[in-house]
Structures are given as structure tokens and as C-alpha cells.
Amino acid sequence: MIEGYTTHRTPILNRRLRLGFVGGGRGLVGHWHSAGARLSNQWNIVAGALSSNPDVAQKSGQEWDLPIDRIYNSYQDMAETESQRSDGIDAVAICTPNDSHFRIAKTFLENDIPVILDKPMTNTVADAQELVELTKVKNGFLTLTYPFVFHAMARHARHMVQNGELGRIRQVNVEYLQEWATLPPDPNIQGRSWRMMPERSGRSSVVADIGTHAYHLLHFVTGLKADEIRADFHVCGAPKDLEDTAYVNLRLEGGVPGLLWVTQAAPGQYCGLRIRVWGEKGGISWDQENPERLIHAPLNEPERHILRGKDTGLCAEAERLVHLPRGHPEALPDAWANLYSEIAIAISARISGQMLPSDFISVPTPADGAHGVQFVNACADSHEAGGSWVSLEDL
Image (cartoon, rainbow, N blue to C red; front, side):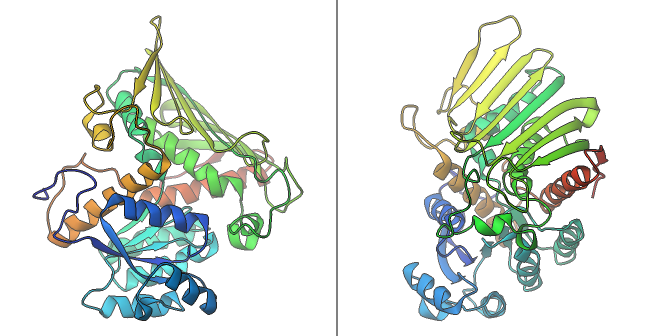
């Protein structure tokens, strides 16, 4: 176990870890990553290839206050140079469009640099499998950024399921609803147009984008994966080449039925990631737009509202993610900080050669990322086959 550990926002080693970025210099995704890393108090951002455009890369690096000699015009130069420095980066955060994830992650893994990769892991199952195998061969480190499961109440929801408080799970519903694709994408907003391009986003838009978050949350909370799925893709907003809405039926492990609904063309919906789980003894409901409240409805008993806070009966793994008393709100920036804190703990343990308790952190694995890619492509397979049931075999 790491000695001297106190909280998730106290540096584990005698220094903050050194973080580099590929992409994200002026986009929303890069902002979330960098804000979470800084708020975690575990990282210093010291290097970056922040754009594929050299002029933008240089300007963005200066805006981020990076050292001039560590502002790179290409990720290849960054990987090679940083791997040779005595003070080289301890990890790289990759915040680029989907089609580039594989080649960038592979380059850094081959240079023995841990990878923090935005979802989805890759566009194809074959590329995802190759990254899983490369991580094993190199004894490397790769994780995915699924920030929503780093909310304390999402962690407590999982504990309640694992602890048998709902009994045997009988059905699950998860949804993620947004509105921005109702109208044609604004070309001035980075990150929207390419999500609608098959050559960049892959075979799916909304499932690859927010559907991966919804499916990961379902699996995280319930512990169940889908054995089979059937999917229908729709365009409910402005005309586009890929879907902006999907309805996915799930046959989860043990025969448990589930429903996943995602859309980016529902006016009045902003970031509505919600999960409901029902078992023999009752149900739970969690909404990331109101992340501090977990609703527990025991069968034939009054509904209970469980609030985030210390010394309030939360499980230990959830309470470790709490930083402020009740009444002082914590929200998505805190979840991103928790994500980067737990990644820092995992990488610090690798650097120091120390062992962590098995339940101390919950950092997504390469297998988690690959399963997400498999889910996206299975949904596309099902839709293209007219809504047929498709099996998700283990990778």
C-alpha cells in the first residue's frame, strides 16, 4: 500500500506527476481534462501537442503557459522526446477525434508512456484489441476517461447493488439525453461537426459519443454486461450522415432485461444521464444533473434520499470521493478531479512499486475500453441488419 496516503487530493509521491496533452488545446474536452487534473492537486501540465495545426499548437501551448521547448508540433515528436527526458511526462492525456485515438495511444505506449484516453477507445474492435494486447506486452498503462462514475453517489449506488440491498437485479434503464444536434452544428463550436462524420466518428455518432458513457455507467453500477443487444438508429434532428438518436434493447447477464436510450436531438434536454435499477427488494435512481442525491425506494417502504457528505453513512469508497460538507455543492468538475486523482494513485503506485488494496480505486481498464468499442459496433451491426439481436462476445 502507498505509504503516507491521506486523501484523493494529496500527492502520493514527493511531487506532483507530470502530465502531457495531445489535442484539446481550445476544445471543451481538453478543458475538462485539464481542469480535472489541476483540481485534483496531483498533476502539473508540462508538455503538449495541442493541435495538428502547428500554428494553433504553438499558440495554444503559450496560452496554457507550457515551457517553449515542450510545445510540440506533432505527437510523434512529443512521445519520442518526452520518453528520453529525465523529467519526462508520467502520462499523456489524449483529447482528439475518435479516428486518431488508436495511432496516438499506440505511439505513446510503444514509448513506455502511460496513456489517459478519451472515449471511445478506438473506432474498430480490431484496433481496440491491439491496444489491449500492446498494453499487456509492454506492461503498460492505459485507462479511459469515464468521469461520471467518479461522482460519490454513483460509487455508492454500485455499493448498494454489490451489497445486496436491492436483491437480485430484475431490470435496468439508462438514458443520456441532450439537445445540441437538433439544429445543424455550429461550425464555430469545436468538436460538433466531426462527430457527425463517419470518417472521423466511425460507424456511429450518438452511441459512440454519449452512448458509451451510458453503457459504462450501467455496467459500473450493476456489474452486468450485455450478452446481446438490438439497436435502432434514428435521425430526429437536422439531416446528418450518422444517427443522433438510438434505442437499444439489452439482454444482460443472467437474463436481466435492460433499455438504453440516447439522443442529442431532444429540445430542452441538456446533459441528462440517468440510471434506474430495480431488484427484488426495491430500486435506486441517480441523475448526473443532480449528482449529490441518490434515491432509494425499498419495496413497501418510504422512499429515501441519500445525500453526498462525510459521516453520513456512505460506503468507504464513496466517502473517499467527498471533499466538502453537505450544503457545499460538488459537481462534474469534482468528478473529473476524482478521476484524475485515482489515475494518479494508480500511476504513483506503479512508479513506487507499491501495491494498492483491490477495492481502493476504480480506474477503467483497457478491457473496459475495448468492451465499449465492441458495444458501439454491435449496435451498428444490429441497426444495419434491421434491428436484429447481436451477441457481444468477450474480448
